[in-house]
Every structure is written in C-alpha cells, then in structure tokens.
Image 1 (cartoon, one colour):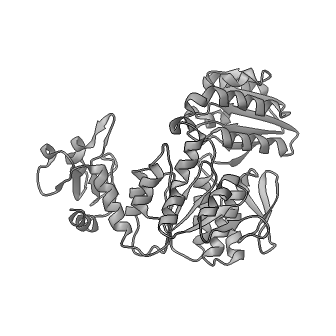
Image 2: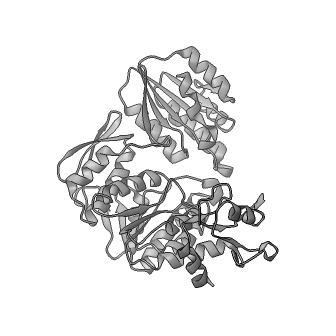
Length: 426
C-alpha cells in the first residue's frame, strides 16, 4: 500500500495537512486531532487544488482522487520513512532540552558552505513535523538535519524509526517539559533514545564534553567524537559575551558571533565540530557562524534608543532560565533589569521550580526584577524584592512609567506568555 501511495506522492507537488493552505497539485493528508477531523475537509482540499487526498474514513471516499488508508497519521509516517530510504546520504538527528533549534540552524549554515543541506523548518520536530520535513526533500539534498523534540518517553524512538538518523547529537539534558516526563530521570532516558538508535545502527555521535550526563553516556559508543574542551576532537575556547559570544576557534581565529549569552557557545561549538567532521573549511565555517542572525525571539539583541534588550521569549524551562539569568549577571551594563514570566509544562514540580527561580534571581544584584504570570507568583516567596503582575497589561503600564535609559533588559518566559509584546513599553 505504501508503494502505491508513494507513486501518488511522486506525482504531486508536496504535502499538506492544512485544508486552509493548499498549493496546486499537493497530496493532502486528512489528519485528526482532539477537536477536528480533517476527513471532513478532504473535498475542500481538492476544490482548492490538491491532486489527491488521503482519508481514513470510507464514507468520505468519493472517487479515485481519494486514497483510503487505515490511519492517515501512520500512513504519513510510513510514507516519510519510505521516502527517507531512497537516500544514502548522512541524516543527522539532533535533540536536547535547550538550544536544539539554534544549533540546528548553525549546523545548516556551516554545512551549507560545501553541501546542499536540507533541515527541519522552524521547530517542526514532532511526530507530524518530522515526516513533513522528510517528505520535503528532493534528490539534490546531500545532508539532512532532522530536529527531534520530545514530550514523553518513546517520542525520540518513534522519530528515529521514521527518520533513521545515521549521525546524531544531543545538545544537553535539562528540565524542559519535566512535568510531562514525570521526573528528570525520565528526561535523561527519553533524550538517550537517540543514542540507543545510533548504537544499534553503528551511527556516529558527537558528545558535548561540558555536559557530565552526556559524557557518562558516551562510554556506550565505540568511536564518539568530543568537543569543545582541550584535547578533544574539536577544540574551541569561549572568550566573553558582551553581549554577543566572542570565541577562539580551533584554527586560533577570533570570531564575533551575533548570538547573545555564554550558553550559546556550546551550540556554536557543536556546529563547528560537525563542520570539521564533514570537512568544511574552517575559515568558511567561522564566517558562517559570524554571519548567522537569530530570529523568532531566540536570544535576539534589540537596541531600543539607549536600552539593550535581550529577547529570549520563545521558550523557558528551569535550565534555560538559570543560564539566561546567570548570563545577565555576568554582562557589563549601567543598569540591569530582568522581566521574567511563567515556565510551562513543569507539572508537579512547577511550584518548587518557580521558588528555585526566585532564589536564582535573588542571588543577583539586578536594579529591578519583574515577574509576570500566575505560576511565577511562587517566585516571590524566595525573591520578595521583585515587582509582580499577574496581568501583562499591568506590567506594560509599569514599564512605561519606569522609562528606562541606558539599561540592559532580559525578557524571558514560556512562549504562551507572549512576553515580546512588552517591547513597546520599554
């Protein structure tokens, strides 16, 4: 059945899973969700230009343009795996609690200096996004980079079965989505599912030697490659972050990146290490890092009149919060302000982690600290000097009153808070 479906796919101009966004001659998959059944929109997809539609309820099959399968999601995943198996190129799997999307983008920039690289768009890194990433590949691709996200045990295993990575890297292991996993030990188990796949299939792994948990796991591999410490496969030295990461690469070239935060040095080193493995000229690799500009509220530096704003409002978990706050503390500025919001998906550990966040902030000497959201109210118990607002509109009003000048300001929260909207008030 998948071979026949693949033949139809080859006739089409890409894949769509959204009946509201149909390009001409695409293959449409009628996926189901908790609150929708796209089988109902299959005819609309055809009217909008789809060449074929894949449905899994027989009542919606009207003619030969409808392809009936047992389950549309499983069919999408099997089709993606069938397509992946048409390639004999390197497939690099990347996962981690923090920094995987930034690292993936840096890897793309570095490897593109020599190869035609196909990488996950944005953060389409789940059980739907990975198949869509694979099915967007054409015969010209020479290296594929597949980002893999996880919300529970087994997610990475599932994605590895679809994408079959030949190479892999875990950026780090922290407390992202800890509530969904049911504890930190399960996060370690979940992320290591990529390693288990690579061990089973004799894949190549790169190990961040600054991460103790990853170093311990490295003992399972026959030929792991380490970075960025002295004596490893790839060496690089962090110099400073003012606010952008400045580092010395392996060829002794001093490189000024456009990434803010010392924690981004490891993401940079990962990309350069992998670039070295695939024989990218070191000067070209360094230039690729130097020219990369982050977007989507990920560690962006925004100059607003006399203020410098570190916009890191795409995501937040205990690990990324701690390094962002520590980085703000180390940076030089006339005044420093932290504007922090809720950390989501922490489950039973939410109250304890938000109290710990308050302790971390209280240990710093910031001029002002603002907390915004319902969950972060717990942080007041350990950081009583912070100014608290449950509502973002009230926070905006207070920031306007403050009228900051010559100030370094960190904005960080989980995406759902929408903390980037306070920019106009600073």
